[in-house]
Length: 158
Length: 318
Image 1 (cartoon, rainbow over the protein chains, first blue to last red):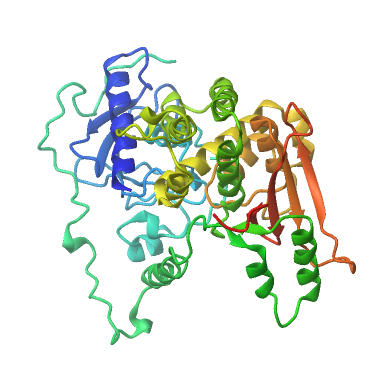
Image 2 (spheres, each protein chain N blue to C red):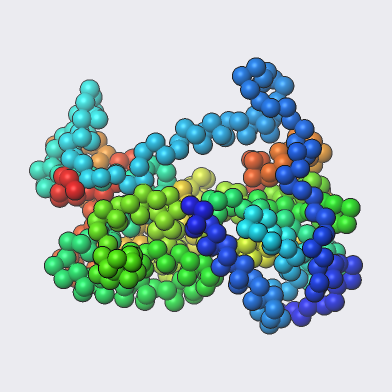
């Protein structure tokens, strides 16, 4: 199991590093910040062009277990003194993200970069900056790992 | 594609400091939850912790108690499970045995059973061919020929390469030792079974089958879209959404559309024996999907019982 997981992640990391070195291939606004091992990677994410998040930069933390890619990684926005999560109806203030591809709709045909792009486009298409309903309750009781939360996906369009 | 603009308030893009302090996901202070043990009053747990406990319990109870793919067993073993009732099922099993289907190879009931069963039968049948080399070549040409369609369907090259490796090496390995071993031996039926019993290798096979199915549906929307229904609501659903949320996701069961698409893409004759307990005379309805270039080619045969697929075989043991 662990062989497979590291094989896939090494391939993905290699591909990302090639893309990052080549502006023509790089997904605009997505930057690998840190990937020192095959457990936790960090990305910076911004929405280029006109959007509610113009000039804001966010950091994504992506954590893998040995069942990747058959199980989704745990993905959340970083909350620290330096970076805050976006104010978005599907993003809780603890950085947890309610997105179906991170849960029920995860497929091993997706990749880490595909996740980043999906989240970027979720921000790009946002019409109104507001917190999710029940944010405070959720944040108070949320498990550390967002994968342990059973999200209900209210709206498939974002 | 927009060009990269200089960042205004972000970190420097080139030399990101390695000492940057991210919150430590393993910091024990984050949880602040006492250890849960047999003395814990469950009323003291918040809903998230309770859910987690329930989920762990569920995960344990569906864990690997049965093999992903079993050895061939006589179909009479299935018959004995209906002892004490369900005579209609027993009559249907007798009917299948009369037709020469004396063996069953079961797949785990995890929602992937159709794809896993079909993938196994698809590769195993090569061992039955007189000219294995020709059979491997034909199979490889079907699979290789389908790769561009996976790209057209929007799968990333990296994902296609990664998911194609296992099926490619298995099929080639039947005649070419280099892809499966270092000692000059070609793949055996037993090794094929071992691969299908390895959690991740087996899931790679399932994933690749799901990708092919998805690409076939996406590439022929006019043929499939009017038959697509949402598995939960029963309402209409678009091709892309159907593929993304039903076909490409592990654990989601297959229905007529997926069976049609995958048998088309693999160019095989597939038949499904529906064991539905209906009909007084014990006859079993076979639904045939004929997509091999030769319509008389021996079909891959699966047996369907409500919610589950296994492989039917004319042999009763390995």
